[in-house]
Image 1 (cartoon, one colour):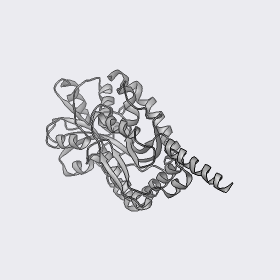
Image 2: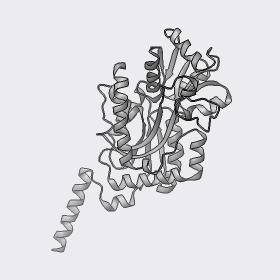
Image 3: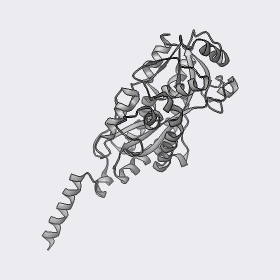
Image 4: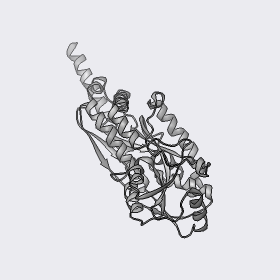
Length: 326
């Protein structure tokens, strides 16, 4: 009888393995090897920077290295499709954001994944306010002049972005809809390359996450007209809000979050979430994120359930704004 039970147990374990299920014992020992974190943009951009800061600490907690893999293309949807199709064993994750996991839905009618159906939310990592930026020699001196100049020269000026559906693209689409203009868009394989072009004066302006902009603003290599939040950011105290600068309708804040492929074990999701929370509570991590202007999520916003709600709400928010742009 004992041998029959042992054989049955072995068969059940083998069946579970073949079907992709993660046994509780396996989940308890996770991870046993390195984890790949896909970043859907080029190195040096805000999503990449935040991912490296947070996962660096998470690796210490989990006891395994977390390897950042930058996969560029199609506004982050190429990498996100790849992540959605990865094995749901906890060893392939992705740092998604408002673009890949919300704006992509209305912008890409043939999108190969669905943010809600094909991913397990793990944890919100950081909020990232949006700034209106320009090359340092762009003629307008303040936001009111910027609005007037862009309206008068809409067919001549251009706006850099990290690809259709990226945060930089989506946030400027909102700005353009408010101004009722359609400037030329100049796509890059990530916000890092787009920022390099702005610094070099090769493009006129862009809407970008604060993480990517603080060093350049402080160095005087680009202009910052306003931040699209209700309050000024401590990392850029001299940059006015859009309301203060005369464009209160433009309010935008992006976010970066961790996701796993659908069907990943709840125990693994819990382990990753706990490691992410521990990282966000670490004083060194917090200092680095705050210096870059990030908004660190509070306790109620750090759960997988809260992230699932955020994704759902963001899809509902951006769909009517971006549907006309498709």
